[in-house]
Length: 370
Image 1 (cartoon, rainbow, N blue to C red):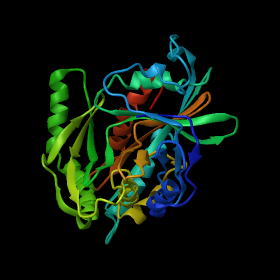
Image 2 (image 1 turned 90 degrees about the vertical axis):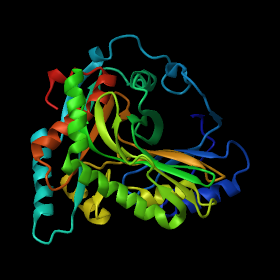
Image 3 (image 1 turned 180 degrees about the vertical axis):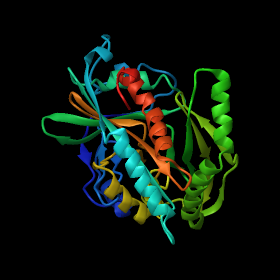
């Protein structure tokens, strides 16, 4: 979907009444496409950034992403790596490891209620020129197993901001009376050597810790969706979900609604943030994230997507992404912490998850400590 220009915007408000505000917007709409597109923040109490575009194009098959209007013009042919001035960890890997240890102490304490918390870290990248979204999207789209996105964010200062990424995770899709979700939890780094890569996949699939982490996410989503469905199932069960850089455990969930008039925005509001990006119990995990992470996630680990006046829509979890702000970018990676996790293991997992974005930015991982 290509949404071009802007003729309107959804007013501010919490995620809990997103569907009502969207319905009210469409009811008052007099011109333009009956679609809202954009991003939902990680914190459901913060406002989303959803706009009504001037034009919407739906393109099937392969096409030149660099030629899409509004993405910064024709992609630069010069080496992206030559334009990178600095890459700084925030927090430092050692500090992230300490945060993981603190979360594990919380979970392992007698009578602890916290079952899982997802902690993230970031890389702050500075370049000699403004980043080109078209260039980055072209590089990210080489991996056909992910959904590539670029969406504007509220302006800050003189530079337009954007969220760009390549997510493997579907939060919710609604078409008529049918819904689908494809949560991921439990990950392992991929390898160039075929035998080593296959071993990593097999080890992940058999891992008790990772399967337990994954089950928490799936069970939570099923529990939330069940009251709204005539049918709800996981036809393939738990399965390996590969991207170019990572193996994930994934479970596709499909259902048929009792009330087809409920919108995709309604279900996005119910589900987000899932235990895949927050933890369990949700409120307790959210509090730990606020305490242990040194920055505001903003739209990282939120959702990107669209909804229309009929209630149909598709929302993806905004992971494997970066926030662009002129010649500055912040890349994010997160990992689910459960009993059995280790600080060193989570540092390694987040380092592996940076790989897709680092490659897109043309950054040599061997030249700095991630």
